[in-house]
Image (tube, rainbow, N blue to C red; front, side, top):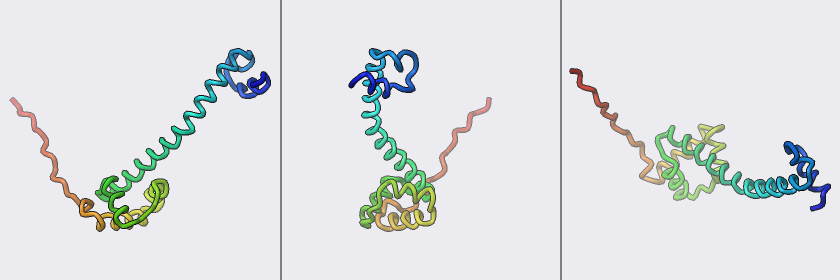
Length: 125
């Protein structure tokens, strides 16, 4: 890259990295490496966020994420994670209908009632 292009890309950097060509070139190259890497990491982070939101929505109805998606797969409901997370946040009644469909399709989704945990009571002396 020529000097003008490097300094244009270095605009906004701190210290001599914005106006000294040798330092600016190194900083710009590293910034471009970070941006290339993080464009891929962003996709990974968003998918993780969608799965967390779906899991939170399904646990309200006492179903976990894995069983929910398995039930949807058995019913051949092909909604991606982004759409499912939006439904769980903004359309709780529609999402509950999907949870019910998933619950009926997969026997592992039946309401599981857990027995209350026993709390250890300290012995007083």
